[in-house]
Image (cartoon, rainbow, N blue to C red; front, top):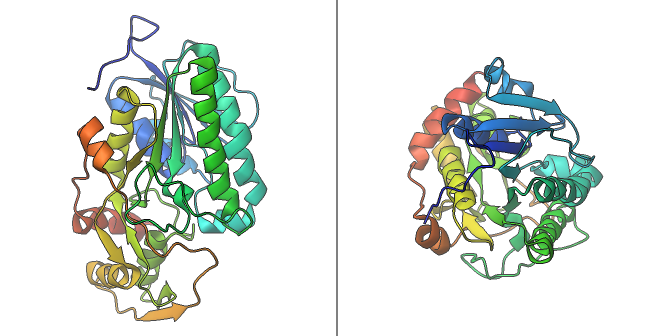
Length: 322
């Protein structure tokens, strides 16, 4: 199933990773380097962080370009793979930089696809479970078209990703480009931004400070959390496979926000109490991936239990919480 793609040079493959200084982009870069790739990372540090790639300084197989991917991407060497992960990805970002979010999903995807077309490279787009919106189908399969508000506060992210998927398939059909689309469900782990508004850093940072843990609504809305290492492995297998339609990658173990808050309190040994606040507009009530395709096509499923993943994640946040 996972055929190795012939590289343009007779030496090691070259991968371009957009969003290379981000949470998932930096972990993907590490995985690619560990598997023998040369990596050219691109990031403009709007939401990425130098700390995430600082350990790669001096690595002869890693080159970094500080650039906005909505501008023309010039690479002066052959490229085998383009991994397009650049995008703000948290509710705080949607409110603060909605236009930049829309532009990286549209113009940024267009530029990254142009690079792949120019180089004859295989292209992977990091899409999201947010394309399903507030789903009316549960769990979500790749065939579900979604229930998304185009004009709500989350629309800038949801619709940019939906447009990006359509653009990727346009390049696939019109230019015969080899493309892959991964729909990422909630993922957590070290290198997440502590103040990005997502539930894992929010709950963990509150618990470590013994502050009240903020649960929105009644806390019965559900999420399913996948550890970053499992997610990145699934992404790698998808790129190296031969399936060109979207594939869900995530952990199907679903839990309510109240259950998750209690799990965090227990894991941190916190004295925090749970407080409730109003549910944000368009916040999905249910989110759980159907990973039947990933199991069948990629021989992939998550391996890391939540308790184990939280140990590593909490240790990382201990170093960030003052």
